[in-house]
Length: 324
Image (cartoon, rainbow, N blue to C red; front, top):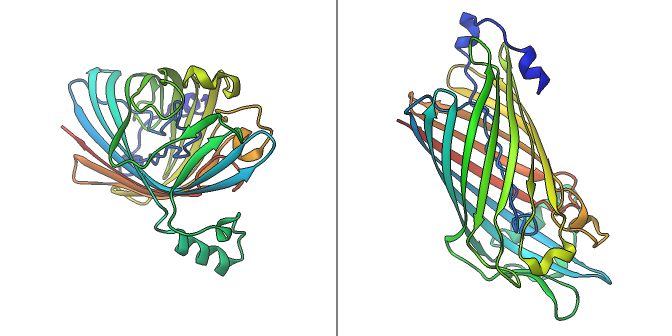
């Protein structure tokens, strides 16, 4: 975040013509992470006093994880669509209040055959995909016996959780191209997927942006509680840390190209297995821009790097925002 403070410089005519449209909205879609709070990358800006905005984001993921050991049996074979809708309001000159709901749709892997062909064409490993039937839905984690950690039925636009947040802009440069903000979030789960009722989580983070010429750097650093159902406490960590770093290259007054890297520490522990205990990490590419003065958008492709982490295989994301 120190780089943001160092970038408090005077505005120039050329920089004013190269506004920032990033970062890309991105959020982890892995079922094993989403039993608790999952951070969504966003910009450090806050809305001006009295301004309203509605943000919608959709992330479509294909997921396959299959493994068994002395401690667990894991089988995730599915596709998942996450939809989020956020309402934001500029409560004061430097304070923004927001509410969000998340919906999920899950089902069998319609793209399984395409992914198998893609991996074969490029010589990638199949990670056991080719050993199982295509187009099957499974989402379960057990201890190999009667104890079930995760077992989620198929859903269509089911309400997953609701969130409330407040964001405060602490610093900004004279031209507003460099910004430092802080945000607090409360998450209330709605769906009961596990052995008991899930509990609410709290998260806090710092958000920064640095603008230099046609380039912008975005960063998010924070942490959250992990309070899934009490029945899972023996395999849960007490908290999770996360960070995202994004680089944006302005392509003019209406378009930008971005690449970003994100990571969040694992929710589960004590399995001694990379696909459960290791931090999910993702590399995201995409474009962002605006239509007119009120509409903004971004399109992204998210890939797990490396492949043997709890992160989903890939996610296609699209975001649209409208301000008043």
